[in-house]
Amino acid sequence: MFSHNKRLQYTVRVEECNPGLANLMLEQFGGPQGELAAACRYFTQALAEEDPGRKDMLMDIATEELSHLEVIGTIVAMLNRGAKGRLAEGVDTEAEMYRRISGGGNDSHVTQILFGGGPALVNSAGVPFSGAYVDSIGEPTADLRSNIAAEARAKIVYERLIRCTDDVGVQDALTFLMTREVAHQQMFEKALYSIDGHFPPGKLPGDPRFTRTYFDLSQGETMPAPGPWNDPDNFDVVSTLEDAIAVDGGSGLPSVGMTAEEEELVTAMALRTASDPEADPPAGAELGLAELEPDDKS
Image 1 (cartoon, rainbow, N blue to C red):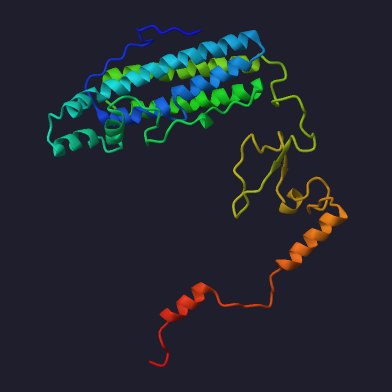
Image 2 (image 1 turned 180 degrees about the vertical axis):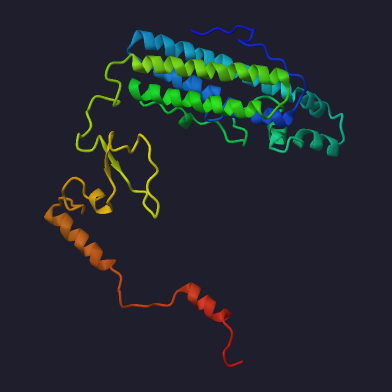
């Protein structure tokens, strides 16, 4: 059960209205790295979690992400508030109002005209929020890794937003939200590493023939850039293309078992749809091209 406290988790202080900046802030309201996506991701994971400690952690963080959604939504609303009133009351000329709501150089006019200046569940480009942003798989060792990456991506978006404004109050609130991404990332890492046998994810082991093999498939005139991911001390490096084909020891050619009837029907279809390698029929593009070619006799 949830209840709402009218006081924000972090106080929002916006120095001046800025519809263009408000539109950019929507990235963390209805975008793929935003607070709603995070809250839904961790909430659904918590419902299915069997470990009581991780369940509490996921539910706590999911609830906090909803409070962050309130903070970022409040920032959007405050940045839009001045233009919202002017638009609603019609105090500006048409040209002045258009300049005011679109002066941010982005789609800020969309949020004003369609949503009246309130935060909408879209990203900064106007793309609606999607449940596809919630990428849980139902395996803790995989989901926790995804959560770590999600918090890292969200932190980077907050860094970019902070650099887009000189409003000290907005920067202050965004810095708090960015910092909480760092805290959550640490929590998810601790939870992941507290699971014995957390790598590889799941229960089934990998095929030992290939778990320590690096295929050097980005070939060219230069040698592959070295790193711990292709260090011969860590991995068996396969640099010859021929050695990277049919690594199972088979022919590398696909095969399928079919009944006699299936094989007969497939053979008939192949014969019916076969191309004639000797044919050279005129193409429509060629016919049109002939009309454009100059007359050699002229």
